Length: 636
Image (cartoon, rainbow, N blue to C red; front, top):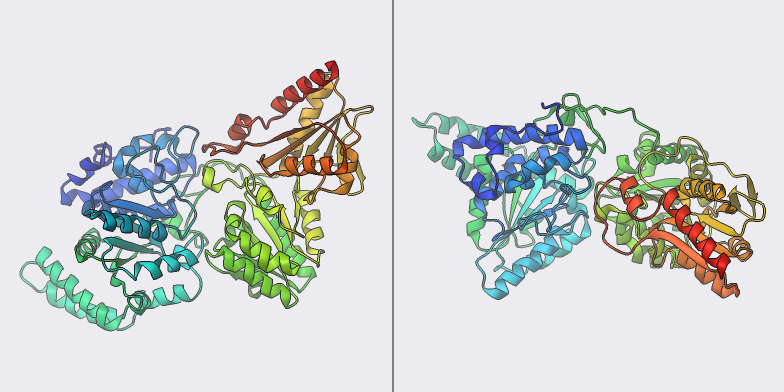
């Protein structure tokens, strides 16, 4: 592996400047190209972090798709898109992997701005089949001879949207639509539920392999074991599968099924995709792959198969190259177990992400009190409502960006029934390299309109523990905690005083400026106050701890100052600043308010510090603007 910043490319991969270069390669070169791609991906992602396990598993599958179909004339949609690195390399972008997921570089998902071969910039699961349904219907209406290929994982198939789409796709026999089920038995973690068991039945039918082996032995005795013999073997395999591994799960819907096929055998994949392309209607190709295929550290990682290391790692061992810091998720995981040991009614729900959300710690301690529902956030929330109705206190742990999907269930199934469900939103605010679809910037704006829902924003490890315990003590409605990704502050940000539930972090005598610091940006607000003090501007910094509904005590406090500023890492529109301004108006106080928050826009990928700087959410930028505001108001 290369030790330089530039990932090392083999001669075949380096010759691919566009998709046509790949398609012109000799068939005999393809196995070596697959090896080169794997070596290249490990070398590249080891430097930047990213989704390595999923991409190692789809090398041959992606190559076969691009050999059979003609992108972008034929449209390829990936679900969720994190397994598109091989696609990017084959479409001429291997030379840009130096800046993968870095500011100004390649995104970690398909991007229309990067290439005409990238169609859907999706990174939320279970959407590809709905996109594909619409795309194929549009081609049919236009009479266009174009195919749509949707690559969907078995994990994504646990999401309800997939089955809503399949129900509609099955009603049409004129759609040139090929659905490739990339079945590796996993999403982030092993795929769960009845679907997983059914797919396992197709993979492991006991009558199939012995019969196949007999035919293989017969074919191998033929004088020439070439493509003709291989074709005979493949035809025999297909017939056996029809007889011995009935495809009821898909064929009962009326969709033709080919498979299962070896997802790491280029010849077998190509043959299956050619047959699917020529069928003329919706077809499912069931490809069996191995997440992390070809790289020992990923295969040895039983928990997540090196799904998405967030930082650089050793390309040989897979171990992180930098010391691991204490993270927000880890603190929550510890407290979740501690609280579960103290109260028998606590249960946890996760949507296919026990490791990334910290729920795996409780799963190890009390496995019967954790429910992984698959990629099904809507079901997770309403299932939590049922648990709460029967005396449990569910903790629903999801990424902030994925909680958007379950708004209706939160409003009508949980809040309207005043049920004690605690939502824990990881990766709230600007998260960085994964880009705009993964930013957790909408949760405050969306969920603060829910009647009876209380939202907390811890600023450090100590307040995360305290506020989680406070949330669990609420028994007359739902609660929500939001915290960011990354490391918690090395030291807790202590309060100099606490008044009516408000933590005073900085207090200057005679101050006329109040800064209200929300959650993880409290440290930045405190630093801004220090800069202002150096310029002779006295400031009080307060952390309300619970940001929705706006505490009455905060409204009363804010009314005593000439200027109020709010600092948050959620959307400015409809965010905490908006809520406080409204509360001040309702109270009759005409206190001017400056709100520092995330602008309503699509923000690019980059590191969290880079993006916060772009958004003016740094101590220096906040202090500079507030100093100018204080001076301007002093002159008026």
